[in-house]
Image (cartoon, rainbow, N blue to C red; front, side, top):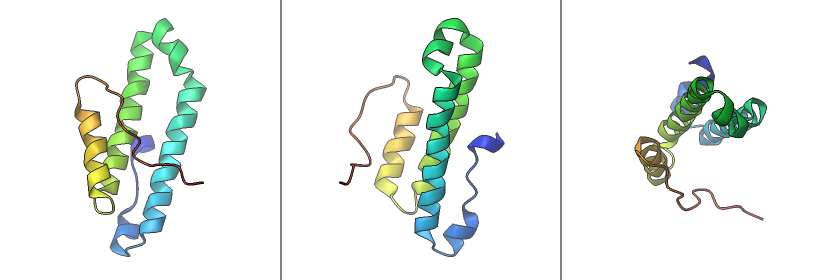
Length: 100
């Protein structure tokens, strides 16, 4: 859907990697807010169909972010995409350590 697409081709062509990362971060921030707005933790208990649609949309964001990171952070990209393809959700290591 339009919400999950990342429009970064212009930045990639100009090698503006910091702009690419900012767009990816903005999309991930949107996804986090969407989870809160939809109250996904409640939705999965009350409306399975709607929660599956929301989860599919969020997965689309994750996949788009993983693909967008490939030229910049190939190992991280592969970990994200492998997690998105997994049949079972397994908690992995943090991909982006916090910097104080």
